[in-house]
Each structure stands twice: as C-alpha cells, then as structure tokens.
Length: 286
Length: 318
Image 1 (cartoon, helix red, strand yellow):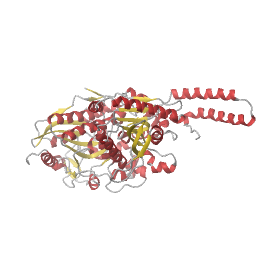
Image 2 (tube, one colour):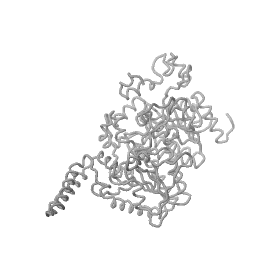
Image 3 (cartoon, chains in turn cyan, orange):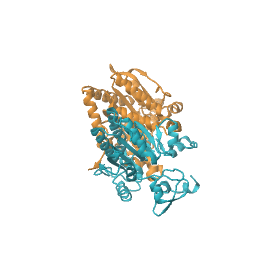
Image 4 (cartoon, rainbow over the protein chains, first blue to last red):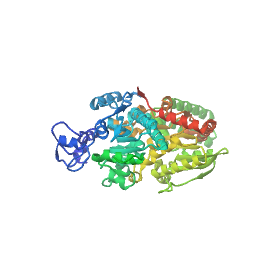
C-alpha cells in the first residue's frame, strides 16, 4: 500500500480500484497490468484480462450466467429478504445499508442460488455478490444456501458454490455466526448422501464463509490469485508485527500448502466443473 | 489471592480497601469496630448489587475477560474425577490453547474439550491467550470422534478471544479446521453440551460450540467478532468498542432472548471470580441436569432436534 492509499479511509480503499470490475465506456483498463482493453473483449473473456490473465471480480448473476446453460434456470429463495431484527446501528443504520446495497446491486442480499444445467448436467449453483455489503453472510445468505442444498438432497443433484465474501455479517451479530453452523450442517447431509459439492473460492473468500461452507467442498477449487483465508492480512500483520510473505493467502499459496485441490481459470470453469462432476457422478464424458 | 477490580468497580474497591484497613486497625488496637466493619460490608454489598444490576454490555465483556475468572481447567479439576488429558492432533502438534480428555462426572465417563487461557505470563504465552491454531481444532475433532466411537457425551467449555490470526495458522488451514468441526459436530452421534464460561469469540468459539444444549455463564459473552474488531471496522475506531458491544448484543441475557442459547447460569454477586466455589457448583449442577435430560432421549431424536435447531438459525422475511 503506498502512502496515499494509507491516508484514505479503509472504506474508500476497498471500494475503489478493483470493485469496478467492468466500468462504463468502451475502453477499460486491466486492474493488474494496466493494459487498455476493449470492454467487449474483456466481457467475452469473462472478466479475465486477455493480456495478463488477471481475474476481475464479477457479480453473482454474471457469474451464474457464464456458468450455467442458458436454459433452464430457476432461481431459489429469491423471495427471502433480509431484516434488521436487531435495529443495528453503527455510523449508519443496518436498514439503510441494506436499502443502499439493494439499490446499487439490484439484489436483495449477497447470495444468488439457481437450479440449472452445465452442459446438460443438472445441478444447483450458488454465487456470492461481493458488492452487496462485502458478500457478507447473514440470515438470508444462510437460508438461501440451505434451500439450494436441500434441492440437491431431494433430487440427488450436485451443488456448486462460488464464494466471494468478507465473512459473517456483523450487523446480524451472533445470528450471522450461526450461519456458519447452518451451512456446514447441511453440507454434512450432502456428504453423508454422497452428493458432490464443489466449492470454488474467488477473490476474496475470508472469515466466516471461508471457515464454513467454502472449505467443505468434496473438491475445493479456487480462481487464480484469489485472496483466501480466515483472518484478514491486516489483522495478521498487526498481530504478528511482521511483513507477510509474498503471495500470502493467495490461491497459489493455498495450493502449495494443501488447502485446495486445484486452481481453475475462469475461462475453463464450465468445462472443468462439468468434467469433475461427470466423473464423480459416473456419467460419460461431454 | 488479592481481588483485582475493574474500572467500573472502583467505588466497590475503595470500600473494600477501607474495610481491610479497619480490620487491620481492629486487630492492632483491639478496639471493637466490628459494628463499623459490618456496616461498611453491608454498604459494599448493596453498592455491588446496584452496580451489577445495571451493567453495560461492555462492562460484561470486561468481566468475561477478568484475569481472575475461572478457566476450563479450574472447572475440570473441581467438577470431574480421573481427568486424563489427551494430547495432540496426530498430524502436526499439540495445541495448549485447547485442552481435552476423558474424565468422570460423578460415575459417568465423559469427554471434555475446552479452550484454556493462561494465568501467569509464561502460561499465557504457552497457551497463546486461549487462541487456538488449526492443530487445536483438529485435536478437538479427534476427541469428538473418539467420544462418538465410545459413546461418551461431550462437554465443551468455551473461553477464547478467537482463533489465532497468525501466519502459521493460515498456512495450516485455520478455516478448514474450524469448518470441519462445524460439519462433524452437527452429525456426531453422542450428546453434546456447550458452556460459554468466559469469552465466546467468533468462529474460534463456535468450532467447539455446536451442540444439543448451549449454556452461558451470566457474565460471559458470545459474539461474531470482538467489540474492538467490530468497532474498528464499522466505527473506524477501536475506542468505540462499548458501542459495538451494545449494538451486537453479546450478553447472555440478550442471546437467551434471541433464542440463540438455551440456558443462563447465574453468577455470584460481583461475578464468577468473587466466589469461585459457588460458580463451579452452579456449573456442575447445570451440567448434571442437562446431561440427565439428554440421556433420556434416543440418539436419533437428539440428532434430529440438533439439526432442526441449527436450521432454524436466522431471521428473515419470506
């Protein structure tokens, strides 16, 4: 971080730069290599820089759209909406934060779940919306995840989840912590029934989401260079008072340390996940 | 041991000091001042009652972290017999921030798993201030499965600021270790009783906190993030921790109202450390009673109820 970024309040820091994954206008710049890119080209390559392979953060719907076959798709749990049941108020009211997030993202909460197919293989896919309060997991995220997983249990079809989250949603206090138990418990049922769950961790997957559903895949995958971990790098730096090693908590680091099975380039996501699931469910190759 | 007082207890501390002084004078000069001492003691008691009847969430957080508060091994020593500590995760190390082992509650063999903080500086460091690393959670998981195999009920004691945020902990998969415990606990075929005795710090607490009966000592806390952590993120200043504590509702009373815990175990006047015997007796009784209740249930029913309870967590519209 340079001196100027340090001066900025952390809020501005996180929302600047990377978040604007695909900005307005015909041209855009890669957030990693600074190459000027034709916007349509970046979209065609699923938000992956064609020059350097950098994976831009993408929204939940864009994610599911590029992952699932066009038809059929049915959204699950769209009717579930968040509540400010604690009347939580910090510098802002939780209620206002929700309204603001709903306006800016067009989503009711931070997880979108759909039944659909990938190359004809039926499954349930879930994707976190990081722009919705940092993809934080509260009651709605937990409940939608469970409803999606329950469909997997009923129909015996696999579950795939793309996570992108800062962790539990503080504004729902201990109830949000309990979503870790809730999502992990339903995964225990999938596990017992031999229904595959593939977890794909994308940038970033931290805290309570990483310490529950995201790390519990039969296969744990990650996109390249995603930040994945329990504690945030800044917290760790403050605790241990030393500089963190290069590439710390990045996908490649996790692969090296045995925490994930493989890294999947977004442009191959459909092929790879389909291939894995087809083998796990003993289907013929595509 | 000399009692140590928290900031908000200063008026009580002053009175207690005066009483001590009088006692000293009393033995010295053989003047009968027992009446005066009695009067002051009564005053100290009613002052304590007043202060403790209107504690803020932040003050309760201070009590939950009180340096003289009983820790897991204090309960283990005085409630159980034949405790054999079992060490290690069989993969990497033994984490002293989590202790576990087999013991008897009355005659009944049980498995104990709990966070352990240190009392003096050396032990604090050795036990990493009660902040476990992945090997601690993996030891806990090993003991959970051992308990299931031999049909021993599990009693957990929760008292941690949180899972340790360190480089090695991340390298060895802190997230996975916690997540795996959550998954295992939800399906474990043996009764599980969890008691928050001090700090219930986030995922680091929950990793041994999923069970059939969850209790909290009156002045313990349980929260998704520490008040300081929450304040520094949402208020941009750790000094707003008292506000964060209030907003998150981290106290046993609030959490019981929200139905997130089953039982509050009352503490003696002034907190657990003021009368450790009474505290431990109360915990012992609560454990014995809830164990008897869970024993009367069929294991399949127990698991169904546990699962249903976990699935019911959440407040939303629709």
